Image 1 (cartoon, rainbow, N blue to C red):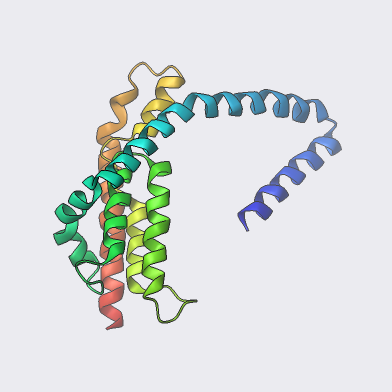
Image 2: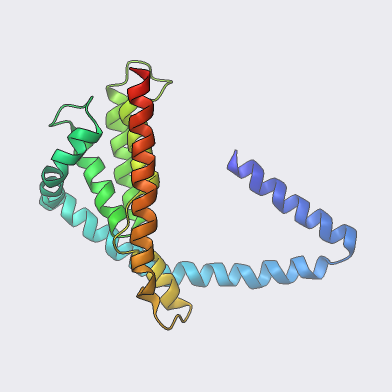
Length: 192
């Protein structure tokens, strides 16, 4: 669906530029911004590769399992329908850890694996379980302690103080996470 929306926006923009006679704007935009996009990818790639590699090392070394055990008291309260040793909890903890470091790209594989594990226990495969919904809320809100990706983007674009967003990032993501989890809890409680 998102692909359809983007395609529609592109065709509308091209059609509008043809109607108004500003086709040069589209040509210049395509050439200029394509180069900018490629440069951004090349500048961000080393950071993503580094953190994805660190997360893989942490997974293989068992560090993520230790992190999952540390988070287990909190996760068992957030996911009361899951047994304490459920495999999805390790992936959820890994996803939360990566999101705390501001590494959305490194968090995504763990989120997908967590959903796969949660889907295995789902009796109704075409409907999300309570645990899946709670995980989606937790992942979307995602408390970020160090917004690594945003800091690197600010640094690449010449920010004088790229780390000045840390406090506001912690506040914003904490409020969104707690609000989302509170609503999730209230809805679940109301259903019962």
